[in-house]
Image (cartoon, rainbow, N blue to C red; front, side, top):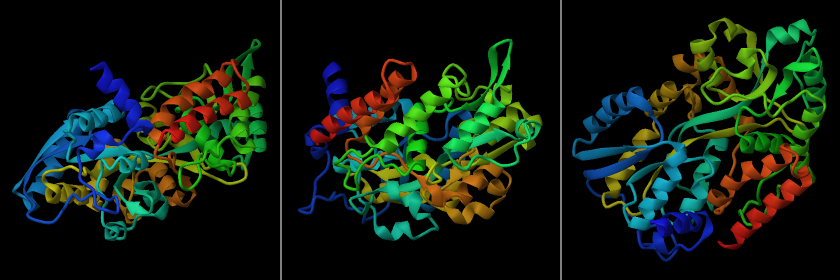
Length: 427
């Protein structure tokens, strides 16, 4: 078991394709030969990292799959529920054992690694124009110009702030670049008895990988080259995107210890920060935990040289080795349709991946979701290399060495670049 888990997880980050090749045949061009034509029937499995808990299960099985079966009564879908912490391991274990689920949910950045290994099947390009997907949303659904997934829900990383704290300080506008962010954060930092009781800026309540990437993109930086074979983040833009956190910690306007875990009342809610990096699900959290603050919290897209909003989310793909590819394709198409996307978004407080849904009651009733949809043109996605599944796990701990003072920003970025180059070199 040790071998299959450790060795294969490494392999899926960038090692041999032998395990996957045993799961699916390929055409001379290298594309999967899984044939989606034929009768839509048979048993299929769906590995799902959405629809959490009892409510989610009822939403998927009691609502969506019931609709799917009304159209395709000869398909039996068995759902394997998981979370993002276990999703990669479940997929790679399935690949190693030859029991890859027929349909899988994947995160943004995950398509190149699994498409490179031929674990997932190409989809017809016509599906990309079937609904009003923003091109920014479709970018992470492709590998080498081929569509491999349909986006379902988005989870954007944005900046939120306390309007009342801004008003009290006489600040009338939101920061437009890093210099303004630092100045405003210093102005909003509160000390009592020599101790900071409110930081001006909390960048640490979201994953440090995602926070740094947001700043990188907002500083006109890139993670990788277009072909995913060259590291580009080891640039002055990449170093500066980490250094700013160190600088703000040094002047007291940010503090690594001032952060909260997902689901807990945020630092904005507690009043221990005035500005924070967050995601669009904050609005639902405010309604549930702090309704008195709903009208006191605003949002904006931050950039330095280029405003950028990080776009995460969940996509749905078809296994290249499905024994019932027509049924699997039908489920992928169904889950990427507006009705399914809207239901999935409502269940999680996420952003629907179809822009026509901006006029829906759900979007209009959630200002942070509406804000994210309005700003999708500024959205950027992580990933971009077949080596991503290995690299992504190393980003946060490597960057943290600089945050806690073990390395400089330059040293941490150089170390991360070395890790990434080694991973890419094993492709």
